[in-house]
Image (cartoon, rainbow, N blue to C red):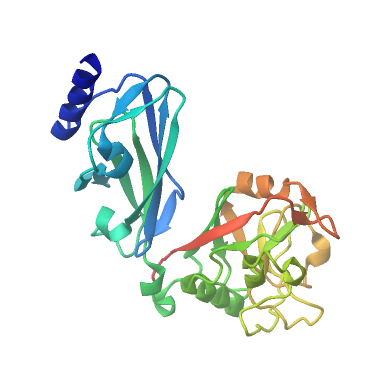
Length: 314
């Protein structure tokens, strides 16, 4: 009888949407990516940890009860009823739920030219919340109207974020090519396949999406090349530059970020930008354990989950 009353109490509180604590249950809500582009999906992870035997409302397992705040304004409520009644969890049980929410459902009126912060909270569960930044939809960005010197790109990796700026005054074709590829989502899911600490980290090869053919990593491209634009930018820590083969005019999609000043690359590779934020992420990636024939292939994948364009118009 005591257990039945406990279950009914949990159910009543959940249905009423009242702020509550469920003794013996710890819940957390976190985003898979802290930033996403509008027009894509916000992926969240809801984790439930039972430290004691506990009855959990069905909505925590199969439903939704989210309250969104966009900027400083109240946003939509996202509510879906759970299936069935309360569920008994034994002490030590851990459950992870992956929640996929279209950006348009979370923040239907995002700014087309700026990043919008969306705070997402599980209603009735104190502290079960997170913030996701929503950037403009890259597919709707007209590159022709951008001020490329002020436009930036955020690289979203499984080690964190790195923000890049560009130098169209020094290498306009390379900047345009890189942004074109970002707009297409070309880099999404590729890996940093060549990492050498105190030198550089290299990525951008579409072949790295295929784990079954690592021997082809470093050989892929977009199907076209960009002629060299060697310039007086130095390859110092944080410089963004384009990889190529022995042919100076063979750059395509592969790029690298310099980890330590490398003067021997000056005037040999086309530098076209800089790392503005995320030096700690650069260091973390450069420090991963590597193997392979040249001891430069990360043992655990370093993945470029996606790219986000932060547009600045002329």
